[in-house]
Image (cartoon, rainbow, N blue to C red):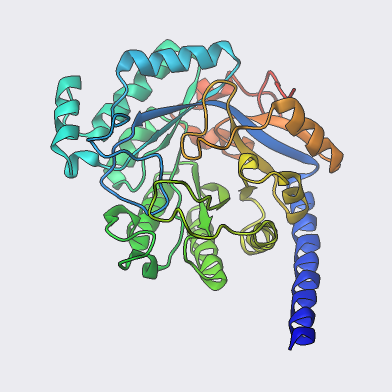
Length: 369
């Protein structure tokens, strides 16, 4: 039995190595020898949310001291500080529709002069555009087509993690139980609506939250199917679950490094080669191995703000990221919130984005060390 198990493990290692070679070849043909990142600030507009995902440490119950909405002055202060440090992107991260669940959220919005979180988000983006050179990227969760149309006027790009297409995870005891906005159908409709409106969109999968490997592939196929129809998915993130104290999933096992390498390789092979493949470098100490699985992007790196979703995991220093990228035979380049191929599709903010863009569509003023 032990010999049989060892043989199975050896076969899996060999198969993963083969997949990684194929994925790297696809990446090199489509993206060359550059691995990109975006220099950004993270603006957590509100930490309240009507969903209660089993792994989330970002969301705060209204009774918690950290439950709040940032004021317009706080939003602007973060953006201005980021601008001083050379950031080009303002990433708005926020809980989904907390006013539909909590009176405290409705009261906070009333004090700010709004009835919904999306109303406030639109004006917060508008404020950043008016007072800084930063371009907003909005992660507001599941949205209607009308809401996307409003946000399109004030955001260069938008994003929402699909996470998974598995409805099993919405059952009691699973990661998405009692999370109405995590319905796979609802999230897929959001990506489709963004496609109909031509919005450059970021999505992705979260691995290790109870899904099977086959369900990961099904999720990637669902994303690619939308991109084949609308062409709007500019990047897909493969993110590994990290267990956090105080959450319902604090005792769950995390995906292994090898699991990430295999999933990334499959993602590169399943997705259209034009879709950027991203993996966050702060969630795995051996992140440079990801390059050998076909990634071409590290995502957002901030010189100012923490990763509010994984606050215990610090961003790597840019000099270190550049050094470790170069050691794999690739160069680190700074991009904008919109990838070069989507710059002209970023209307009505195409003119604002073009002021940051060099002739190749990447950032005009590179900061990679």
